[in-house]
Structures are given as C-alpha cells and as structure tokens.
Length: 479
Image 1 (cartoon, one colour):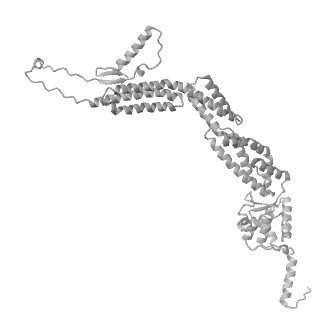
Image 2: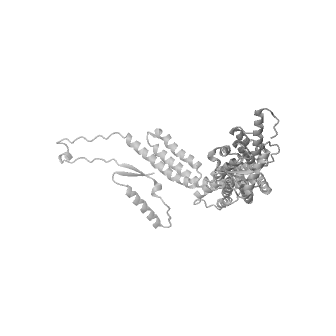
Image 3: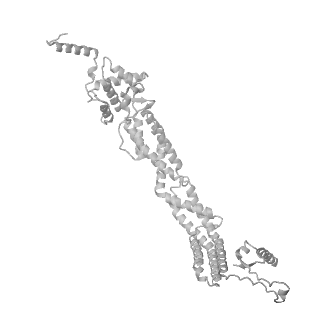
C-alpha cells in the first residue's frame, strides 16, 4: 500500500478501510441508515414512497435487492426474509438487518414485491409487517416474491367500477391504493345490503335476489388479498357488477320512496283475504286483483305509482260494503240495549245500573264504527246478545238480593183446626227462579217456510227447546 500518513494509527485505519472496501465492495450502497424499528414503521406509513427511487440515497442497494428478487422469482426459487438477510449481511454487502428490512419495506410500498406470511399476502395496512420482517420467530416463515405488474385494462376496469357502482371517481392511481379504496367502498355497500335484507323478514318485497347476488360477488372479491388475483376477479365479474349497479338502483329507490305504498297494498290484500268470504262485490274483487298483480310482480317499480289510486278506490268500496253490513248489526245492538233498559226501568234500582248498562252497548257501537272487517262486525251481533243476557242476569240477581228474607211458618198448635187435628201441614208456596233465554238462540239458524207444515215444524222445534229449559222450579223469560 502507498500510505502517505506517518501516524501509526492512521496507517492502520487506512489499511482496515482498504481491506473492508476490498471484501465488502457493495457496503457503500447503503448511505442512509436505520437505527430502530420505529423508523421502519414510519417508512411503512409514509405515502410518498415512489416506485422510481430517483431521489433515494440507497438507490443502488434497492436496485440490487430488487434485481435479486426478480431473478429468483422468474426461476421459481422461493426466498424467505431469513435467507435475504443472510445473503446481504455477508460479503460483498455487509448490510445490517434493519437496513435490509428498510429496503424490503420500500420495495413493498413501491409495489415491486409481494410479501407472504402463513399463505396470506400482506398489505401495507397490516401493522405487523415490521414485526414479521425483523423478529427472528417470523423470518423463515415470510416469503418474498417479485410482483407482476397489473395490466392497464384491469386497473381501468376497477376505476370504472368505482364510478358505476359507487359514483366515486377520486380513486388512487397505484394498484394497492386502488384495491384498498375499492374494498372500502365495497364494505360500505355490503353494510347497506345487510340493512336492506332485514326488511325481507317483514314481507316479500321485490329485489331480494338482486341484493343477495350483489352481496355474494362483493364478498367474493373482498376476501382476495393477492393484488393480481383481485384485479383478475374484478375483470371476470365486470358484467355481474354492472348488472347489480343497474338493478340495485331500483331496489334502493323502492325502499326509499315506494315501500310505504307497497306496505299499504299488502295491508289491503290481507284485509281482503280475511274477508273474501263476505266480499262478493265484483268491483272490489277487480281492484284487489290489480293491486295483487303489481305486488306479486318481480319488478313492480314502474307500476307502483298506480297503487295509491287503486288502494283508495278499494278502501272506499270496502268501506261502503262494510257499512251496509254493519247497519243491521247496529240496529240489533240498539234493540238489545233498549230491551235491557226497558227491563231495568221496572225496578227501583234502575238509576244505579242504567249508566253502566248503557255504556256497555255504547262501547260496542263505538267498536262497530271502527271495525275494518266483516267477521268482526258480524261477531258483534252475537256479542250484543251476550251483553243483553248478562245484563238481564244482573238484574235478576239484584232483584233476588233485594227481596226481604222469608219468615218460616210457626209450628202448629195442638188442638187447633181441622187440618191440625188431622195432622196435615198447610201447603208451602215455592218461589220459582227466572231463567232468561235469548230469542235469537231459540230461533238460531236459517229457516225456510213455504207451507203451514213448515210453520208447525218450526213451532215444534221451539216448543222442544223451551220444554228442555223448563222445570217446576223455573220460569222462562224470553229476551
């Protein structure tokens, strides 16, 4: 060596430098050093890492590692992080582990390589990347591969899908950023689909198959972590995505603007189905059929604006028919109330019970006015009869309660009249119990009378029923 320095220490240092430069010829590729894992985390979170590395101080080292990974990937030679550290920590490199990890992270951020751990490709959003690249427990399980460039048509397709599906055009230009943004938007769409699917537990609304198919294809792409596989799958499902975008728009508008009309239609159909035995009117039947055709249609969206008019017509017609049915029932209730009050007026306690009995029948009339089905209105006729019978029973019990107590006859005196002499007791008058029987129950059921014989048959039936209720301790009152 041609050493100019005279100082022994400087001579030895120059000799060491020459020796190191000879053995570690690529040591000086690293010009900027990493001192801690925290700095690696900062690199991972830095969004300014570029793929060209033009201004990168460690550009030679990065290009060296990138070329090595590319060669081995093309030869299908697997590379672990442990093997890469082992290679670049020896001559002619001599780089420290943190600097090697920094190079891998920068290549990863620049989308030049892929990192795989436990058969799963990592993303830059994974907070454990630094741990996997630096901790010895993970180094031999982390695989590094050269990343193939995604064709432009695949990237363009995802950008177009963002616009068509989500009306979102401000998307990142890089592959990973675009994939991440698409997945974020997809997560939001899946959440919206789940919210809409809850409605189908209430009724058979249209569009369920559209939402379920949309959720299926979104779930399919969102689970893919490999970038190339993701873009290929999006390209493969392009038509399915666009179909969902077209058809789901109608479904979303339905739940936003049309669901209330659809629910009204379902309510009217249910009312009709419960009353169809009584609704024989052709106009009402025709209206409900038109409503039913719209509701049962696979794609009713364009016809739903017709529902409010049809529903109003049906409601008016149904109300008219129900009012006709309720009128005789109302008269029966009023007549029953009149019978009860007339019976009550015969007794001195009429003022005590009159208001209570009147309220019972007034409540029944009020319910009849609110009735929205035939069978409920018809049943009120029977309910009125029962109220009448209960009221008569209460009157009878009150009469019995107010009667004075019966005083027993005194014992006969010996040596009295002829009856006493003969040992006979005077007759005891028995008080008969009143049994209230509804005329409606006696004449229950339809009867057709064409001849006098039919009249005789009817009277015979009535007589038999009355005799069945009559005995020596009972008197019958028809109410």
